[in-house]
Image (cartoon, rainbow, N blue to C red):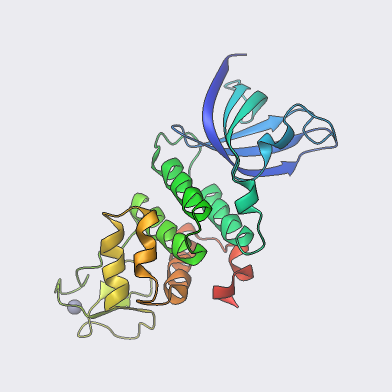
Length: 245
Ligand SMILES: [Zn+2]
Protein backbone atom coordinates (compact mmCIF):
# COMPACT_ATOMS: atom_id res chain seq x y z
CA UNK A 1 0.00 0.00 0.00
CA UNK A 2 1.30 3.50 -0.76
CA UNK A 3 2.32 5.63 2.17
CA UNK A 4 1.73 9.36 2.56
CA UNK A 5 1.93 12.08 5.17
CA UNK A 6 -0.01 15.25 5.84
CA UNK A 7 -0.33 18.10 8.30
CA UNK A 8 -3.78 18.02 9.82
CA UNK A 9 -6.10 18.88 12.70
CA UNK A 10 -8.02 16.15 14.55
CA UNK A 11 -11.77 16.81 14.19
CA UNK A 12 -13.08 13.67 15.83
CA UNK A 13 -11.94 10.39 17.31
CA UNK A 14 -14.47 7.63 17.93
CA UNK A 15 -14.11 3.96 18.96
CA UNK A 16 -14.38 1.61 16.00
CA UNK A 17 -14.05 -1.63 17.95
CA UNK A 18 -12.28 -2.85 21.09
CA UNK A 19 -8.85 -2.22 19.59
CA UNK A 20 -9.11 0.58 17.07
CA UNK A 21 -10.42 4.09 16.69
CA UNK A 22 -11.77 5.99 13.72
CA UNK A 23 -10.14 9.38 13.28
CA UNK A 24 -11.37 12.26 11.10
CA UNK A 25 -8.67 14.74 10.15
CA UNK A 26 -8.88 18.08 8.40
CA UNK A 27 -5.70 18.10 6.34
CA UNK A 28 -3.84 21.25 5.35
CA UNK A 29 -4.34 20.71 1.62
CA UNK A 30 -6.63 17.81 0.76
CA UNK A 31 -9.80 18.23 2.78
CA UNK A 32 -11.01 15.56 5.16
CA UNK A 33 -9.19 12.32 5.72
CA UNK A 34 -10.81 9.41 7.52
CA UNK A 35 -8.45 6.84 8.93
CA UNK A 36 -8.34 3.85 11.24
CA UNK A 37 -5.90 4.25 14.10
CA UNK A 38 -4.97 0.63 14.86
CA UNK A 39 -4.68 -0.15 18.56
CA UNK A 40 -5.67 3.40 19.56
CA UNK A 41 -8.50 2.12 21.79
CA UNK A 42 -6.06 0.22 24.00
CA UNK A 43 -4.87 1.83 27.22
CA UNK A 44 -1.27 1.90 26.08
CA UNK A 45 -0.96 2.86 22.45
CA UNK A 46 1.53 4.47 20.14
CA UNK A 47 -0.62 7.52 19.42
CA UNK A 48 -0.73 8.90 22.98
CA UNK A 49 -2.37 12.34 22.98
CA UNK A 50 -1.95 12.80 19.22
CA UNK A 51 -5.63 12.01 18.57
CA UNK A 52 -7.17 14.52 20.99
CA UNK A 53 -9.69 16.99 19.55
CA UNK A 54 -8.03 19.74 17.48
CA UNK A 55 -4.48 18.52 17.96
CA UNK A 56 -2.38 19.87 15.09
CA UNK A 57 0.11 17.32 13.88
CA UNK A 58 1.94 15.55 11.10
CA UNK A 59 0.24 12.27 10.30
CA UNK A 60 1.66 9.29 8.39
CA UNK A 61 -0.74 6.85 6.81
CA UNK A 62 -1.24 4.06 4.32
CA UNK A 63 -4.02 4.15 1.83
CA UNK A 64 -5.60 1.92 -0.75
CA UNK A 65 -7.65 3.35 -3.60
CA UNK A 66 -10.32 0.70 -3.13
CA UNK A 67 -10.91 1.57 0.51
CA UNK A 68 -12.54 4.65 1.92
CA UNK A 69 -10.51 4.53 5.11
CA UNK A 70 -6.78 5.08 5.33
CA UNK A 71 -4.68 3.49 8.08
CA UNK A 72 -2.67 5.73 10.38
CA UNK A 73 0.80 4.45 11.10
CA UNK A 74 2.20 7.20 13.29
CA UNK A 75 2.24 10.93 13.85
CA UNK A 76 3.88 13.78 15.64
CA UNK A 77 2.19 16.56 17.58
CA UNK A 78 2.97 20.02 16.25
CA UNK A 79 0.75 21.84 18.68
CA UNK A 80 -1.83 20.59 21.15
CA UNK A 81 -4.83 22.85 21.72
CA UNK A 82 -6.49 20.39 24.06
CA UNK A 83 -6.01 22.45 27.22
CA UNK A 84 -7.96 25.31 25.60
CA UNK A 85 -10.46 23.21 23.64
CA UNK A 86 -11.43 21.00 26.58
CA UNK A 87 -12.24 23.85 28.99
CA UNK A 88 -15.89 23.72 30.04
CA UNK A 89 -16.67 27.16 28.60
CA UNK A 90 -15.11 26.29 25.23
CA UNK A 91 -15.76 22.63 24.54
CA UNK A 92 -19.22 22.87 22.99
CA UNK A 93 -18.17 25.73 20.72
CA UNK A 94 -15.36 23.58 19.39
CA UNK A 95 -17.65 20.55 19.08
CA UNK A 96 -19.94 22.72 16.95
CA UNK A 97 -17.08 23.98 14.75
CA UNK A 98 -15.84 20.40 14.24
CA UNK A 99 -19.38 19.18 13.51
CA UNK A 100 -19.95 21.85 10.86
CA UNK A 101 -16.67 21.10 9.10
CA UNK A 102 -17.20 17.33 9.26
CA UNK A 103 -20.70 17.56 7.79
CA UNK A 104 -19.93 20.13 5.12
CA UNK A 105 -16.44 19.72 3.73
CA UNK A 106 -16.16 16.99 1.10
CA UNK A 107 -13.47 14.34 1.25
CA UNK A 108 -10.41 15.20 -0.84
CA UNK A 109 -11.25 18.90 -1.25
CA UNK A 110 -7.98 20.58 -2.20
CA UNK A 111 -8.24 23.79 -0.27
CA UNK A 112 -6.24 25.07 2.68
CA UNK A 113 -8.59 27.90 3.71
CA UNK A 114 -10.59 25.90 6.22
CA UNK A 115 -7.43 24.52 7.84
CA UNK A 116 -5.96 28.01 8.20
CA UNK A 117 -9.26 29.37 9.50
CA UNK A 118 -9.46 26.72 12.23
CA UNK A 119 -5.85 27.30 13.28
CA UNK A 120 -6.56 31.04 13.52
CA UNK A 121 -9.65 30.41 15.69
CA UNK A 122 -7.72 28.04 17.98
CA UNK A 123 -4.85 30.50 18.36
CA UNK A 124 -7.33 33.30 18.98
CA UNK A 125 -8.87 31.40 21.87
CA UNK A 126 -5.42 30.57 23.21
CA UNK A 127 -4.84 34.33 23.23
CA UNK A 128 -8.02 34.70 25.31
CA UNK A 129 -10.26 36.26 22.66
CA UNK A 130 -13.96 35.87 23.46
CA UNK A 131 -15.27 32.48 22.34
CA UNK A 132 -18.59 33.80 21.02
CA UNK A 133 -16.87 36.35 18.77
CA UNK A 134 -14.51 33.66 17.46
CA UNK A 135 -17.46 31.40 16.66
CA UNK A 136 -19.19 34.26 14.84
CA UNK A 137 -16.04 34.97 12.82
CA UNK A 138 -15.77 31.27 11.97
CA UNK A 139 -19.40 31.10 10.81
CA UNK A 140 -19.08 34.16 8.55
CA UNK A 141 -15.88 32.88 6.95
CA UNK A 142 -17.13 29.32 6.70
CA UNK A 143 -20.17 30.50 4.71
CA UNK A 144 -18.04 32.87 2.64
CA UNK A 145 -15.55 30.17 1.66
CA UNK A 146 -18.39 27.80 0.74
CA UNK A 147 -19.88 30.52 -1.51
CA UNK A 148 -23.02 30.70 0.65
CA UNK A 149 -22.67 34.08 2.34
CA UNK A 150 -25.18 36.74 1.35
CA UNK A 151 -23.99 40.11 0.12
CA UNK A 152 -24.30 42.39 3.17
CA UNK A 153 -24.24 45.51 1.00
CA UNK A 154 -27.13 44.95 -1.40
CA UNK A 155 -30.81 44.07 -1.37
CA UNK A 156 -31.11 40.82 -3.33
CA UNK A 157 -34.40 42.01 -4.87
CA UNK A 158 -34.05 45.70 -5.84
CA UNK A 159 -30.22 45.96 -5.50
CA UNK A 160 -30.30 49.05 -3.33
CA UNK A 161 -27.12 49.53 -1.34
CA UNK A 162 -28.90 51.65 1.24
CA UNK A 163 -29.81 49.16 3.94
CA UNK A 164 -29.59 50.22 7.56
CA UNK A 165 -31.37 47.01 8.42
CA UNK A 166 -31.76 43.86 6.34
CA UNK A 167 -34.26 41.00 6.38
CA UNK A 168 -32.98 37.51 5.61
CA UNK A 169 -34.95 35.69 2.93
CA UNK A 170 -36.77 32.65 4.28
CA UNK A 171 -34.54 30.38 2.17
CA UNK A 172 -31.46 32.22 3.55
CA UNK A 173 -30.34 33.13 0.00
CA UNK A 174 -29.96 36.86 0.15
CA UNK A 175 -31.02 39.92 2.09
CA UNK A 176 -33.98 42.22 1.53
CA UNK A 177 -34.33 45.93 2.22
CA UNK A 178 -37.24 47.46 4.17
CA UNK A 179 -39.14 48.09 0.92
CA UNK A 180 -38.79 44.53 -0.38
CA UNK A 181 -39.35 42.52 2.78
CA UNK A 182 -42.61 40.61 3.18
CA UNK A 183 -42.97 37.94 5.85
CA UNK A 184 -39.28 37.55 6.73
CA UNK A 185 -38.56 37.51 10.46
CA UNK A 186 -34.77 37.24 10.75
CA UNK A 187 -32.96 40.54 10.55
CA UNK A 188 -29.47 42.00 10.62
CA UNK A 189 -28.98 45.53 11.85
CA UNK A 190 -26.50 48.14 10.66
CA UNK A 191 -23.68 47.01 12.97
CA UNK A 192 -24.16 43.35 12.09
CA UNK A 193 -24.02 44.13 8.37
CA UNK A 194 -20.88 46.21 8.94
CA UNK A 195 -19.30 43.31 10.83
CA UNK A 196 -19.79 40.99 7.83
CA UNK A 197 -17.99 43.53 5.60
CA UNK A 198 -15.27 43.93 8.20
CA UNK A 199 -14.44 40.20 8.42
CA UNK A 200 -13.45 40.16 4.75
CA UNK A 201 -10.33 42.18 5.50
CA UNK A 202 -9.54 41.39 9.13
CA UNK A 203 -7.97 38.56 11.05
CA UNK A 204 -9.97 36.92 13.86
CA UNK A 205 -7.49 38.26 16.39
CA UNK A 206 -8.95 41.72 15.74
CA UNK A 207 -12.46 40.59 16.71
CA UNK A 208 -12.13 42.12 20.18
CA UNK A 209 -12.63 45.47 18.46
CA UNK A 210 -16.30 44.62 18.05
CA UNK A 211 -17.08 43.71 21.64
CA UNK A 212 -19.81 46.00 22.95
CA UNK A 213 -21.01 47.20 19.54
CA UNK A 214 -23.57 44.41 19.41
CA UNK A 215 -24.14 41.10 21.15
CA UNK A 216 -23.13 38.24 18.84
CA UNK A 217 -25.78 35.74 20.05
CA UNK A 218 -28.57 36.53 17.60
CA UNK A 219 -26.24 36.56 14.59
CA UNK A 220 -24.72 33.25 15.75
CA UNK A 221 -28.22 31.72 15.83
CA UNK A 222 -29.03 33.15 12.41
CA UNK A 223 -25.85 31.85 10.77
CA UNK A 224 -26.08 28.42 12.42
CA UNK A 225 -29.63 28.25 11.02
CA UNK A 226 -28.25 29.15 7.60
CA UNK A 227 -25.59 26.42 7.78
CA UNK A 228 -28.27 23.89 8.76
CA UNK A 229 -30.59 25.07 5.98
CA UNK A 230 -27.97 24.74 3.23
CA UNK A 231 -26.56 21.50 4.62
CA UNK A 232 -30.04 20.00 5.13
CA UNK A 233 -29.10 18.70 8.55
CA UNK A 234 -29.61 19.62 12.20
CA UNK A 235 -26.47 20.32 14.18
CA UNK A 236 -26.35 18.49 17.49
CA UNK A 237 -23.76 20.56 19.38
CA UNK A 238 -25.42 23.98 19.15
CA UNK A 239 -28.10 23.17 21.75
CA UNK A 240 -25.45 23.14 24.48
CA UNK A 241 -24.33 26.70 23.80
CA UNK A 242 -25.63 29.57 25.95
CA UNK A 243 -26.68 31.33 22.72
CA UNK A 244 -29.28 28.61 22.08
CA UNK A 245 -30.70 28.18 25.58
ZN1 LIG B 1 -35.00 45.97 -1.91
